[in-house]
Amino acid sequence: MKRPIFIYYQLDRFYQNHRRYATSFNIAQLSDPKEEANADIKDCKPEAYAAKGIPVVPCGLVAWSLFNDTYSFARRPRRAGGIGGVEALRVIKSGISWRSERERLFGKHVYPKNFQ
Image (tube, rainbow, N blue to C red):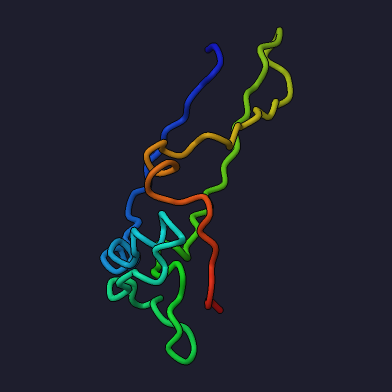
């Protein structure tokens, strides 16, 4: 195969708290830090308020979660007699998100506040 080679994968049976997670965010807070004061955070439960009732910014489980999927790829070089080691392949990890999410959904200057 010639470069680049794109790898797509799918997660099965990954349902942990799906309904709560999928609805626990505030789009205004995620896209623009200026919206922090105007944001209605009722949909952010259970991550809506910190100690003493101070709003968490950005609020919600979506803003405070990180999916870490680690993988690697290797190949066996073609050699006479079929004997040889394994060669690790370089995986490029930049530019892998959807453009719509980078440019419209998640803002570049949204910084956390009031989160323990």
